[in-house]
Amino acid sequence: MNPMLIGISTCIVVALTAAFFPLGLPILGIILVAISWRNFLKQCEHKARIEADMYSALNKGVTYAGQGDYPNAIKAFDIALDRPPRTLNRFPHIAETYYNRGGVHYLMGNLFDALQDYDQAIDHKPKYVDALINRGPVHAEQGNYQAALADYQTAMQLMSDLSPDLSIVYHNSGNAYEALGDAENAIESYSQAIRLNPRYIDAYTAQGLLYIKLQNYTQAIKHMSHVIQLQQENAGESPGLARLEAKREHVFYHRGNAYFQKGDYADAIKDYTQVIQLNPEVISAYEYRGIAHCYLGNNQNALDDFSHVANSDPSGNTHYNHAIIQSLMGMKKEALASVNEALNLDENVIPAYYFRWNLRYDLDNQQIDLEDLQRAEALEMEKINVIYEYDAHGFYQRGLARLRRGNRQGAITDMEKVIQVCQNLQYFTFYQKAEQTLLEIQDST
Image (cartoon, rainbow, N blue to C red; front, top):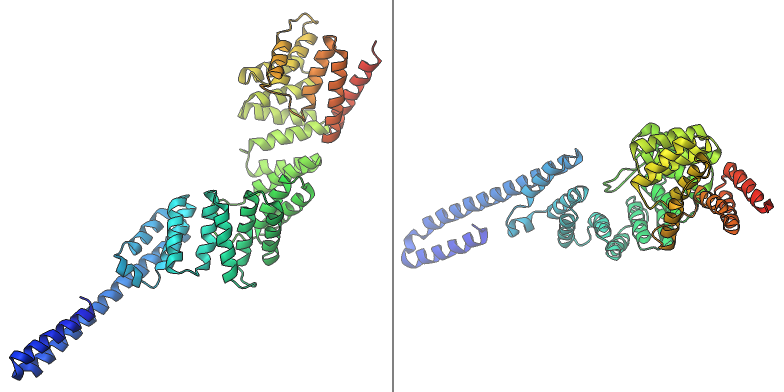
Protein backbone atom coordinates (compact mmCIF):
# COMPACT_ATOMS: atom_id res chain seq x y z
CA MET A 1 0.00 0.00 0.00
CA ASN A 2 1.12 3.54 -0.67
CA PRO A 3 2.64 5.18 2.48
CA MET A 4 0.43 8.23 2.02
CA LEU A 5 -2.70 6.05 2.01
CA ILE A 6 -1.44 4.27 5.12
CA GLY A 7 -0.98 7.63 6.87
CA ILE A 8 -4.46 8.86 5.89
CA SER A 9 -6.06 5.59 6.99
CA THR A 10 -4.25 5.78 10.31
CA CYS A 11 -5.47 9.32 10.93
CA ILE A 12 -9.07 8.29 10.20
CA VAL A 13 -8.86 5.29 12.55
CA VAL A 14 -7.30 7.43 15.31
CA ALA A 15 -10.00 10.07 14.94
CA LEU A 16 -12.82 7.49 15.17
CA THR A 17 -11.20 5.84 18.17
CA ALA A 18 -10.90 9.19 19.92
CA ALA A 19 -14.59 9.86 19.33
CA PHE A 20 -15.89 6.55 20.66
CA PHE A 21 -13.13 5.29 22.98
CA PRO A 22 -11.28 8.30 24.41
CA LEU A 23 -9.52 6.26 27.13
CA GLY A 24 -8.00 3.77 24.66
CA LEU A 25 -6.60 6.41 22.34
CA PRO A 26 -2.92 6.44 23.53
CA ILE A 27 -2.49 2.67 23.28
CA LEU A 28 -4.30 2.36 19.96
CA GLY A 29 -2.39 5.27 18.55
CA ILE A 30 0.92 3.66 19.44
CA ILE A 31 -0.19 0.38 17.87
CA LEU A 32 -1.37 2.05 14.69
CA VAL A 33 1.76 4.13 14.37
CA ALA A 34 3.87 1.00 14.77
CA ILE A 35 1.84 -0.85 12.13
CA SER A 36 2.07 2.12 9.78
CA TRP A 37 5.82 2.36 10.26
CA ARG A 38 6.23 -1.38 9.68
CA ASN A 39 4.18 -1.21 6.49
CA PHE A 40 6.15 1.81 5.36
CA LEU A 41 9.43 -0.03 5.84
CA LYS A 42 8.07 -3.05 3.97
CA GLN A 43 6.97 -0.80 1.16
CA CYS A 44 10.42 0.78 0.95
CA GLU A 45 12.05 -2.65 1.09
CA HIS A 46 9.77 -3.93 -1.68
CA LYS A 47 10.50 -0.89 -3.82
CA ALA A 48 14.23 -1.26 -3.25
CA ARG A 49 14.06 -4.97 -4.14
CA ILE A 50 12.21 -4.22 -7.38
CA GLU A 51 14.73 -1.54 -8.33
CA ALA A 52 17.59 -3.92 -7.48
CA ASP A 53 16.05 -6.61 -9.69
CA MET A 54 15.61 -4.12 -12.54
CA TYR A 55 19.15 -2.85 -12.14
CA SER A 56 20.47 -6.43 -12.06
CA ALA A 57 18.57 -7.23 -15.27
CA LEU A 58 19.98 -4.07 -16.88
CA ASN A 59 23.54 -5.09 -15.96
CA LYS A 60 22.97 -8.61 -17.27
CA GLY A 61 21.68 -7.18 -20.55
CA VAL A 62 24.73 -4.96 -20.92
CA THR A 63 27.02 -7.92 -20.19
CA TYR A 64 25.28 -10.17 -22.71
CA ALA A 65 25.40 -7.38 -25.32
CA GLY A 66 29.12 -6.93 -24.76
CA GLN A 67 29.60 -10.65 -25.34
CA GLY A 68 27.60 -10.49 -28.57
CA ASP A 69 24.79 -12.61 -27.11
CA TYR A 70 22.02 -10.35 -28.38
CA PRO A 71 18.98 -12.64 -27.80
CA ASN A 72 19.78 -13.05 -24.09
CA ALA A 73 20.56 -9.33 -23.85
CA ILE A 74 17.07 -8.54 -25.17
CA LYS A 75 15.52 -10.99 -22.67
CA ALA A 76 17.37 -9.32 -19.79
CA PHE A 77 16.32 -5.83 -20.86
CA ASP A 78 12.73 -7.06 -21.28
CA ILE A 79 12.77 -8.30 -17.67
CA ALA A 80 13.87 -4.85 -16.52
CA LEU A 81 11.24 -3.03 -18.57
CA ASP A 82 8.30 -5.41 -18.12
CA ARG A 83 6.87 -3.39 -15.20
CA PRO A 84 3.81 -1.26 -14.50
CA PRO A 85 4.19 2.35 -15.74
CA ARG A 86 4.38 3.76 -12.20
CA THR A 87 7.21 1.38 -11.30
CA LEU A 88 9.03 2.09 -14.55
CA ASN A 89 8.79 5.85 -14.16
CA ARG A 90 10.32 5.64 -10.66
CA PHE A 91 13.28 3.57 -11.89
CA PRO A 92 16.25 5.97 -12.10
CA HIS A 93 17.87 4.03 -14.96
CA ILE A 94 14.85 3.68 -17.22
CA ALA A 95 16.33 5.85 -20.00
CA GLU A 96 19.58 3.86 -19.97
CA THR A 97 17.66 0.59 -20.17
CA TYR A 98 15.70 1.68 -23.24
CA TYR A 99 18.93 3.06 -24.75
CA ASN A 100 20.82 -0.21 -24.31
CA ARG A 101 17.96 -2.33 -25.61
CA GLY A 102 17.67 -0.01 -28.60
CA GLY A 103 21.35 -0.53 -29.34
CA VAL A 104 20.98 -4.31 -29.36
CA HIS A 105 17.91 -4.10 -31.59
CA TYR A 106 19.93 -1.97 -34.01
CA LEU A 107 22.81 -4.44 -34.07
CA MET A 108 20.30 -7.21 -34.78
CA GLY A 109 18.79 -5.19 -37.63
CA ASN A 110 15.47 -4.59 -35.84
CA LEU A 111 15.22 -0.96 -36.89
CA PHE A 112 11.59 -0.42 -35.90
CA ASP A 113 12.15 -1.72 -32.36
CA ALA A 114 15.43 0.21 -32.08
CA LEU A 115 13.71 3.46 -33.03
CA GLN A 116 10.93 2.91 -30.49
CA ASP A 117 13.45 2.27 -27.71
CA TYR A 118 15.54 5.33 -28.56
CA ASP A 119 12.36 7.43 -28.64
CA GLN A 120 11.49 6.17 -25.16
CA ALA A 121 15.00 6.86 -23.88
CA ILE A 122 14.90 10.44 -25.18
CA ASP A 123 11.34 10.97 -23.86
CA HIS A 124 12.54 10.07 -20.37
CA LYS A 125 15.81 11.99 -20.76
CA PRO A 126 15.46 14.75 -23.40
CA LYS A 127 19.15 15.70 -23.33
CA TYR A 128 20.35 12.11 -23.70
CA VAL A 129 23.21 12.74 -26.15
CA ASP A 130 24.19 9.10 -26.68
CA ALA A 131 20.60 8.19 -27.55
CA LEU A 132 20.42 11.06 -30.05
CA ILE A 133 23.70 9.94 -31.63
CA ASN A 134 22.50 6.34 -31.94
CA ARG A 135 18.97 7.19 -33.10
CA GLY A 136 20.43 9.06 -36.07
CA PRO A 137 21.71 5.94 -37.90
CA VAL A 138 18.33 4.24 -37.37
CA HIS A 139 16.60 7.17 -39.08
CA ALA A 140 19.24 7.05 -41.83
CA GLU A 141 18.84 3.33 -42.51
CA GLN A 142 15.11 3.89 -42.80
CA GLY A 143 15.82 6.55 -45.44
CA ASN A 144 14.92 9.49 -43.18
CA TYR A 145 18.21 11.38 -43.54
CA GLN A 146 16.85 14.76 -42.54
CA ALA A 147 15.65 13.31 -39.21
CA ALA A 148 19.10 11.78 -38.76
CA LEU A 149 20.80 15.14 -39.35
CA ALA A 150 18.38 16.79 -36.91
CA ASP A 151 19.44 14.30 -34.20
CA TYR A 152 23.12 14.90 -34.92
CA GLN A 153 22.71 18.67 -34.83
CA THR A 154 20.84 18.48 -31.52
CA ALA A 155 23.62 16.29 -30.12
CA MET A 156 26.25 18.79 -31.28
CA GLN A 157 24.42 21.61 -29.49
CA LEU A 158 24.48 19.60 -26.26
CA MET A 159 28.14 18.60 -26.51
CA SER A 160 31.30 20.59 -25.99
CA ASP A 161 33.78 21.09 -28.84
CA LEU A 162 36.27 18.84 -27.04
CA SER A 163 33.91 15.93 -26.47
CA PRO A 164 35.51 12.71 -27.76
CA ASP A 165 32.13 11.47 -29.00
CA LEU A 166 31.79 14.46 -31.31
CA SER A 167 33.82 12.59 -33.94
CA ILE A 168 31.03 9.99 -34.12
CA VAL A 169 28.46 12.72 -34.75
CA TYR A 170 30.52 14.20 -37.58
CA HIS A 171 31.09 10.76 -39.12
CA ASN A 172 27.38 9.92 -39.00
CA SER A 173 26.51 13.35 -40.36
CA GLY A 174 28.86 12.69 -43.26
CA ASN A 175 26.99 9.46 -44.02
CA ALA A 176 23.66 11.31 -44.05
CA TYR A 177 24.97 14.14 -46.24
CA GLU A 178 26.42 11.62 -48.69
CA ALA A 179 23.10 9.78 -48.88
CA LEU A 180 21.42 13.12 -49.66
CA GLY A 181 23.92 13.76 -52.47
CA ASP A 182 25.66 16.60 -50.63
CA ALA A 183 29.27 15.54 -51.25
CA GLU A 184 30.76 18.84 -50.09
CA ASN A 185 29.22 18.69 -46.61
CA ALA A 186 29.89 14.97 -46.43
CA ILE A 187 33.62 15.46 -47.02
CA GLU A 188 33.72 18.34 -44.53
CA SER A 189 32.00 16.19 -41.89
CA TYR A 190 34.33 13.22 -42.43
CA SER A 191 37.32 15.57 -42.25
CA GLN A 192 36.07 16.97 -38.93
CA ALA A 193 35.66 13.45 -37.58
CA ILE A 194 39.23 12.59 -38.59
CA ARG A 195 40.53 15.84 -37.10
CA LEU A 196 38.93 14.99 -33.76
CA ASN A 197 39.98 11.33 -33.91
CA PRO A 198 42.95 10.62 -36.22
CA ARG A 199 42.51 6.87 -35.65
CA TYR A 200 38.88 6.76 -36.74
CA ILE A 201 38.94 3.93 -39.32
CA ASP A 202 35.29 4.27 -40.33
CA ALA A 203 35.69 7.97 -41.15
CA TYR A 204 38.77 7.37 -43.32
CA THR A 205 37.02 4.48 -45.10
CA ALA A 206 33.80 6.41 -45.71
CA GLN A 207 35.67 9.41 -47.07
CA GLY A 208 37.85 7.18 -49.25
CA LEU A 209 34.78 5.51 -50.76
CA LEU A 210 33.22 8.91 -51.42
CA TYR A 211 36.40 10.03 -53.21
CA ILE A 212 36.17 6.91 -55.41
CA LYS A 213 32.60 7.86 -56.25
CA LEU A 214 33.81 11.39 -57.09
CA GLN A 215 36.63 9.90 -59.22
CA ASN A 216 39.26 11.53 -57.01
CA TYR A 217 41.36 8.39 -56.95
CA THR A 218 44.50 9.99 -55.52
CA GLN A 219 42.67 11.04 -52.35
CA ALA A 220 40.86 7.70 -52.20
CA ILE A 221 44.18 5.83 -52.27
CA LYS A 222 45.57 8.13 -49.57
CA HIS A 223 42.65 7.45 -47.22
CA MET A 224 42.54 3.69 -47.82
CA SER A 225 46.31 3.47 -47.32
CA HIS A 226 45.94 5.16 -43.95
CA VAL A 227 43.24 2.67 -42.94
CA ILE A 228 45.50 -0.23 -43.95
CA GLN A 229 48.35 1.23 -41.90
CA LEU A 230 46.12 1.64 -38.83
CA GLN A 231 44.86 -1.92 -39.20
CA GLN A 232 48.37 -3.33 -39.60
CA GLU A 233 49.48 -1.47 -36.46
CA ASN A 234 46.28 -2.49 -34.66
CA ALA A 235 45.90 1.20 -33.86
CA GLY A 236 42.56 1.94 -35.47
CA GLU A 237 39.38 2.85 -33.61
CA SER A 238 35.77 2.30 -34.60
CA PRO A 239 33.66 4.10 -31.97
CA GLY A 240 29.90 3.96 -31.84
CA LEU A 241 27.50 1.29 -33.03
CA ALA A 242 28.42 -0.57 -36.23
CA ARG A 243 26.86 -3.71 -37.67
CA LEU A 244 29.51 -3.93 -40.40
CA GLU A 245 33.23 -4.12 -39.73
CA ALA A 246 35.75 -2.68 -42.21
CA LYS A 247 37.58 -5.94 -42.91
CA ARG A 248 41.10 -5.77 -44.23
CA GLU A 249 40.25 -7.46 -47.52
CA HIS A 250 37.53 -4.87 -48.15
CA VAL A 251 39.94 -1.99 -47.68
CA PHE A 252 42.54 -3.58 -49.99
CA TYR A 253 39.76 -4.22 -52.50
CA HIS A 254 38.60 -0.59 -52.48
CA ARG A 255 42.17 0.69 -52.79
CA GLY A 256 42.77 -1.77 -55.60
CA ASN A 257 39.70 -0.37 -57.39
CA ALA A 258 41.06 3.15 -56.97
CA TYR A 259 44.42 2.10 -58.41
CA PHE A 260 42.59 0.29 -61.22
CA GLN A 261 40.47 3.33 -62.13
CA LYS A 262 43.56 5.52 -62.01
CA GLY A 263 45.31 3.21 -64.48
CA ASP A 264 47.94 2.04 -61.99
CA TYR A 265 47.42 -1.63 -62.82
CA ALA A 266 50.57 -2.97 -61.17
CA ASP A 267 49.54 -1.63 -57.75
CA ALA A 268 45.94 -2.73 -58.39
CA ILE A 269 47.19 -6.28 -58.98
CA LYS A 270 49.11 -6.18 -55.68
CA ASP A 271 46.00 -5.12 -53.77
CA TYR A 272 43.73 -7.67 -55.46
CA THR A 273 46.31 -10.34 -54.62
CA GLN A 274 46.15 -9.24 -50.97
CA VAL A 275 42.37 -9.54 -51.09
CA ILE A 276 42.57 -13.07 -52.48
CA GLN A 277 45.12 -14.10 -49.86
CA LEU A 278 42.88 -12.77 -47.08
CA ASN A 279 39.66 -14.15 -48.57
CA PRO A 280 39.84 -16.42 -51.64
CA GLU A 281 36.03 -16.24 -51.98
CA VAL A 282 36.07 -12.66 -53.31
CA ILE A 283 35.57 -13.64 -56.97
CA SER A 284 35.50 -10.07 -58.28
CA ALA A 285 39.11 -9.64 -57.10
CA TYR A 286 40.15 -12.40 -59.55
CA GLU A 287 38.12 -10.76 -62.31
CA TYR A 288 39.59 -7.29 -61.88
CA ARG A 289 43.07 -8.68 -61.38
CA GLY A 290 42.64 -10.61 -64.63
CA ILE A 291 41.60 -7.45 -66.47
CA ALA A 292 44.58 -5.58 -65.01
CA HIS A 293 46.92 -8.40 -66.12
CA CYS A 294 45.32 -8.22 -69.57
CA TYR A 295 45.90 -4.47 -69.81
CA LEU A 296 49.56 -4.99 -68.90
CA GLY A 297 49.95 -7.80 -71.44
CA ASN A 298 50.38 -10.52 -68.77
CA ASN A 299 48.22 -12.89 -70.79
CA GLN A 300 48.96 -16.14 -68.96
CA ASN A 301 48.20 -14.57 -65.57
CA ALA A 302 45.03 -13.07 -67.02
CA LEU A 303 44.02 -16.46 -68.40
CA ASP A 304 44.51 -18.08 -64.98
CA ASP A 305 42.31 -15.47 -63.30
CA PHE A 306 39.58 -15.56 -65.94
CA SER A 307 39.55 -19.37 -65.85
CA HIS A 308 39.01 -19.23 -62.08
CA VAL A 309 36.16 -16.72 -62.47
CA ALA A 310 34.51 -18.70 -65.27
CA ASN A 311 34.57 -21.85 -63.14
CA SER A 312 33.51 -20.18 -59.88
CA ASP A 313 30.93 -17.65 -61.07
CA PRO A 314 29.86 -18.51 -64.62
CA SER A 315 28.03 -15.79 -66.52
CA GLY A 316 27.88 -14.41 -70.01
CA ASN A 317 30.40 -11.68 -69.24
CA THR A 318 32.88 -13.92 -67.41
CA HIS A 319 33.03 -16.40 -70.31
CA TYR A 320 33.26 -13.51 -72.77
CA ASN A 321 36.31 -12.15 -70.89
CA HIS A 322 37.75 -15.66 -70.83
CA ALA A 323 37.37 -15.86 -74.62
CA ILE A 324 39.13 -12.51 -75.10
CA ILE A 325 42.33 -13.60 -73.41
CA GLN A 326 42.23 -17.02 -75.12
CA SER A 327 41.99 -15.27 -78.47
CA LEU A 328 44.90 -12.94 -77.63
CA MET A 329 46.96 -16.05 -76.89
CA GLY A 330 46.05 -17.61 -80.24
CA MET A 331 43.69 -20.18 -78.69
CA LYS A 332 40.88 -19.60 -81.19
CA LYS A 333 39.09 -22.94 -80.78
CA GLU A 334 39.09 -22.53 -77.00
CA ALA A 335 37.93 -18.93 -77.43
CA LEU A 336 35.06 -20.11 -79.62
CA ALA A 337 33.98 -22.61 -76.94
CA SER A 338 34.04 -19.84 -74.32
CA VAL A 339 32.01 -17.48 -76.53
CA ASN A 340 29.46 -20.23 -77.12
CA GLU A 341 29.17 -20.70 -73.37
CA ALA A 342 28.82 -16.93 -72.89
CA LEU A 343 25.87 -16.78 -75.27
CA ASN A 344 24.31 -19.91 -73.76
CA LEU A 345 24.28 -18.12 -70.40
CA ASP A 346 23.26 -14.70 -71.73
CA GLU A 347 21.92 -14.30 -75.25
CA ASN A 348 22.13 -10.50 -75.08
CA VAL A 349 25.94 -10.12 -74.89
CA ILE A 350 26.24 -8.16 -78.16
CA PRO A 351 30.05 -8.20 -78.60
CA ALA A 352 30.05 -11.98 -78.19
CA TYR A 353 28.05 -12.33 -81.44
CA TYR A 354 30.58 -10.24 -83.37
CA PHE A 355 33.38 -12.15 -81.67
CA ARG A 356 31.90 -15.55 -82.55
CA TRP A 357 31.31 -14.54 -86.16
CA ASN A 358 34.95 -13.44 -86.51
CA LEU A 359 36.24 -16.63 -84.89
CA ARG A 360 34.17 -18.77 -87.23
CA TYR A 361 35.30 -16.63 -90.17
CA ASP A 362 38.92 -17.48 -89.32
CA LEU A 363 38.35 -21.13 -88.44
CA ASP A 364 35.97 -21.99 -91.30
CA ASN A 365 37.80 -20.14 -94.08
CA GLN A 366 35.11 -17.45 -94.41
CA GLN A 367 32.34 -20.01 -95.15
CA ILE A 368 29.80 -18.88 -92.54
CA ASP A 369 26.31 -17.42 -92.43
CA LEU A 370 25.31 -13.99 -91.17
CA GLU A 371 23.06 -15.09 -88.32
CA ASP A 372 25.34 -13.81 -85.53
CA LEU A 373 25.82 -10.42 -87.20
CA GLN A 374 22.10 -10.05 -87.82
CA ARG A 375 21.35 -10.92 -84.20
CA ALA A 376 23.87 -8.40 -82.86
CA GLU A 377 22.64 -5.64 -85.18
CA ALA A 378 19.04 -6.34 -84.19
CA LEU A 379 19.88 -6.10 -80.49
CA GLU A 380 21.67 -2.80 -81.05
CA MET A 381 18.84 -1.40 -83.16
CA GLU A 382 16.23 -2.42 -80.59
CA LYS A 383 18.45 -0.96 -77.84
CA ILE A 384 18.14 -4.21 -75.88
CA ASN A 385 21.83 -3.99 -75.16
CA VAL A 386 24.91 -2.06 -76.24
CA ILE A 387 28.65 -2.58 -76.34
CA TYR A 388 30.04 -1.38 -73.02
CA GLU A 389 31.66 2.04 -73.34
CA TYR A 390 35.10 0.79 -72.31
CA ASP A 391 34.98 -2.60 -74.05
CA ALA A 392 37.86 -2.07 -76.48
CA HIS A 393 37.64 -5.70 -77.61
CA GLY A 394 33.93 -5.41 -78.33
CA PHE A 395 34.40 -2.41 -80.61
CA TYR A 396 37.37 -4.13 -82.23
CA GLN A 397 35.35 -7.26 -83.02
CA ARG A 398 32.50 -5.18 -84.46
CA GLY A 399 34.95 -3.15 -86.53
CA LEU A 400 36.63 -6.30 -87.83
CA ALA A 401 33.25 -7.81 -88.73
CA ARG A 402 32.24 -4.61 -90.55
CA LEU A 403 35.51 -4.61 -92.49
CA ARG A 404 34.98 -8.21 -93.57
CA ARG A 405 31.46 -7.37 -94.70
CA GLY A 406 32.72 -4.45 -96.79
CA ASN A 407 31.72 -1.61 -94.43
CA ARG A 408 35.07 0.17 -94.55
CA GLN A 409 33.92 3.45 -92.96
CA GLY A 410 32.13 1.63 -90.15
CA ALA A 411 35.30 -0.35 -89.49
CA ILE A 412 37.39 2.85 -89.35
CA THR A 413 34.93 4.43 -86.90
CA ASP A 414 35.12 1.41 -84.61
CA MET A 415 38.91 1.18 -84.73
CA GLU A 416 39.18 4.88 -83.87
CA LYS A 417 36.91 4.19 -80.91
CA VAL A 418 39.14 1.29 -79.85
CA ILE A 419 42.20 3.54 -79.92
CA GLN A 420 40.42 6.19 -77.86
CA VAL A 421 39.31 3.63 -75.26
CA CYS A 422 42.79 2.10 -75.06
CA GLN A 423 44.30 5.55 -74.50
CA ASN A 424 41.82 6.26 -71.70
CA LEU A 425 42.47 2.87 -70.09
CA GLN A 426 46.23 3.00 -70.72
CA TYR A 427 45.78 -0.36 -72.43
CA PHE A 428 48.84 0.09 -74.57
CA THR A 429 49.37 -3.53 -75.67
CA PHE A 430 46.01 -3.65 -77.43
CA TYR A 431 46.34 -0.03 -78.55
CA GLN A 432 49.19 -1.09 -80.81
CA LYS A 433 47.10 -3.86 -82.39
CA ALA A 434 44.16 -1.50 -83.00
CA GLU A 435 46.42 1.21 -84.43
CA GLN A 436 48.04 -1.27 -86.82
CA THR A 437 44.60 -2.54 -87.93
CA LEU A 438 43.39 1.01 -88.52
CA LEU A 439 46.43 1.84 -90.64
CA GLU A 440 45.88 -1.28 -92.73
CA ILE A 441 42.23 -0.33 -93.31
CA GLN A 442 43.12 3.24 -94.26
CA ASP A 443 45.86 2.06 -96.61
CA SER A 444 43.63 -0.50 -98.28
CA THR A 445 41.92 0.41 -101.54
